[in-house]
Length: 248
Ligand SMILES: N[C@@H](CCC(=O)N[C@@H](CS)C(=O)NCC(=O)O)C(=O)O
Image (cartoon, rainbow, N blue to C red; front, side):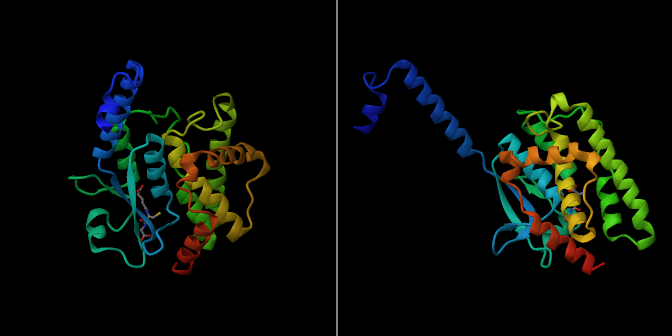
C-alpha cells in the first residue's frame, strides 16, 4: 500500500519523483559513510571538549567540509596506552574505518583536503603568516622571566603581520578565506583565541588598538556555525593554561 503510493505515477509528477530518488540516494550515501573518529582533548565523562587549538583546527576542517565525524575525548590526566604509540601522546588523532591512526593536525588537514576536495579550503595566504604565533605566545606567558620580553616582542611582530595582511585584504574579507574559513583560518584563529583570552587573564594584556583588524576578524569567525559547533569556551582556555603554568 505504502509502496504503491510512493511509486504511483498519479501521486507524483516526474520531477517530484526524480527529486525523491536523489534525496534517497543522497541519504544512503551519507549513512553508508562511517563517520571518522576524531580523538580530541576533553573530558570523556561529561563529553566536554577541551582547549586544544590543534584539535580545533582539525574540527573546523571537518565542519567546513561537512565530513561526518564523532569525537572521542582524551583525558590528559589518564591517557589511553595506544595514544603514546600512535602520536607520542598528542592530539588530535583521527581514525577512519579500516585505517590506522593518523596523528598531527598538519597531516590531517592535508589528508582531508585531498580526500574531500569540495568545498576547497586551499589558501593563498603565505604560510609564514601566524607560523611563530604559538611559540611566541607560550614564551611570553610562561617562559623564563628573562625571555618573556623577547617572546612578547616576537608575538607583537607576528600579530602585526596578521593585522597588516587582514587590513590589506579587507575587501576580500572578513576572513582569510573570504566569507568562509579556509586552511589559514582553521590554523590561525584557534591560536589567536588562546592568545587573546590567556594573555588578558594572566597578564592583563589587551590587543593593542592598532591591531583592530584582528579583533574584527575574531568577531566575524565566531559568528560562523563551524566555529560555534567547535568552540570550547574561554573558561576552558583559562583552566588549561592554569594547569600548564602550575606544572611548569
Ligand atoms: N603538531 C601537533 C601538535 C599537537 C599538540 O601539541 N597537542 C597538544 C594539545 S594542544 C597535546 O596533545 N599535548 C599533549 C600533552 O600536553 O600531554 C599537531 O599539530 O597536531
